[in-house]
Image (tube, rainbow, N blue to C red):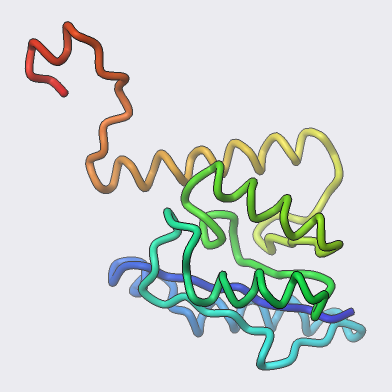
Amino acid sequence: MRIAFYVRVSTERQQQAQTIEQQVALLRAYVADRPDWIVEEQHIFRDDGHTGAKLQRPGLDALRDQAARANFDTVLVTAPDRLARNYVHQMVILEELERHGISVVFIDRPPSDDPHEQLVLQIRGAVAEYERNAEFGISLVMPTPRLCRAGVV
């Protein structure tokens, strides 16, 4: 099976927690247990210093381009928040790859077609978006006239 990796860090703080190379090492270790899985260097897509809140990222763009050409069968990612920090973007990417016949495996949780696992994936996507918004102080409160008059939003 032809495998691609996608790795991303966007901030120095994330870089201290887990570097691009540490993510690649985790993905390589995951593949090492599967002798029929093959990873070529040109299929390791990196976004160093790019936010997961945007869909336009050099590494992700290259991955999506090669996915459209069916250059690999599966994409490995350490966790859903490395793929996207916006729930809708995460679903767009996953559905796009699925349309090309490419599966995505998040190695921090075993792949499953179980509806409960799909729900957990969706919740994790929403939590990643919440964490990003909270990190940057973005209000998740819907502005109402009363809150605007009070100067809250």
